[in-house]
Image (tube, rainbow, N blue to C red; front, top):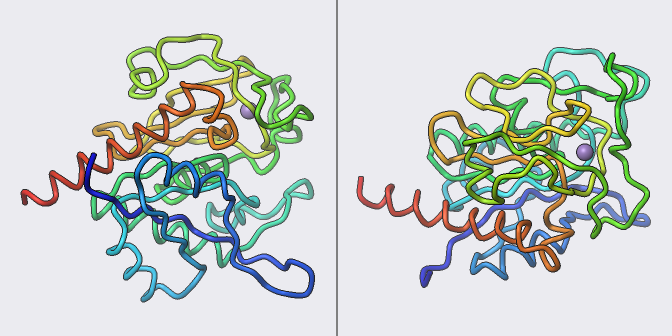
Length: 247
Ligand SMILES: [Mn+2]
């Protein structure tokens, strides 16, 4: 792929010491660069600038981060909800809706899969352990993030299966207490953990959207299947950009 595509990555506004900083994880930035993309860090800002950013980018990578404020899916916060930043939520939800409208491919990681689902009308568990009736596995692993700890089943004939291969036992890492609950009508489930927790969602009708609940950015250097998620993202960006340029 010779053309360089611009990949938007929303930055979190977080207090580091005494200073508010715009931060992103270096592993997502490095993953985009490794696969030939140009990362563009997008600060939390007003809707007018957001629509400018949405036009600048060829693809959107939604990284991990804090919980999503439940007001975005019409719920009140339960006691087990973690840190939230509703300005970040509003910015990312806005970006997802613009990216879908403009046919810019999206790759959502951890919090990203949740933001995707909420932006398109679905919701999430605020806390798996207090809200699910079923026994729930350890999804906030104590092992290093480079190591997979629980398995997932990839939905047969899903787009995700084309990327990582057929498997009912793919080991993934896990660092979440929220997860997709009611799936957006525009999306379908592409992977589940053995306890039934949704670990992957994707577009129903095209290859525009992929979201995973685990952290491929912490594993792609040592795991070819996780690396394939990044290279597939750049392939999707290339393919949608080519379609757009023909319109
Ligand atoms: Mn998990």
